[in-house]
Image (tube, rainbow, N blue to C red; front, side):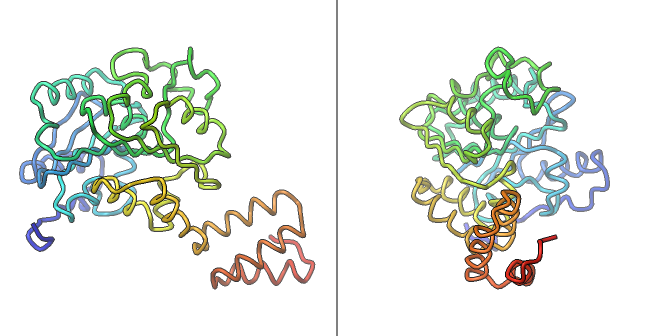
Length: 310
């Protein structure tokens, strides 16, 4: 199947969440299906090829990220002739909903995942938790999760106080503890910033020879956005879907950050906060040697002149 034969759908006309749901219902009739899962989740399936990308996303994220208000998983998979299944959370639910459990039970009963040669579960943050937790439905699959939570059950993760409202959710029932749910996966890739200690502790809860912890220093609290800024998010997902993702592939791609002004500027900001003028000067000189950017150049000129950065 070549790109010219694939119809790429677009929900960009949606002006509200209800508009989006209605448009996606129409798109689903042609692409595969769109199904409401209870009151707070939806599932969109695009039926194209024998590779399946399962992504866990949020309604707000899909509508705000551009790309015709289509799920990221669909945007990546469809042009390549791959199928995609996106579980959309309409709120910060962590996918802890009996309607979602029941949906995956039906997929398992129907042997849905067995129709595909390769299945990849993808998500970031809350979506990363979802990707890991529900990967148990497809033994032998690959998981690519960015800064995922292992659980938010207070008995096991009381130290994570970032999502206090999620503590009312039940993480002890089915599809609950993500590290247990990935045991039957072929390979699991976790990308996180070791400087973000809470993310690092969650990553450490995943254990086994098939777990690959990919440490990306200074990637920050939103690794999906940072990977997209340095133009390596899609190549990473591509590699996962083609079965070529390895730690060496990630670290080779991650080197692209050294040529990205946004990343370098954020790194300079961290060094500035350390109040180490000599280190700041050296870092600015290195950054300006790597990229040509007016703000970095002006910052270097100010520091060399003994003036504080604004």
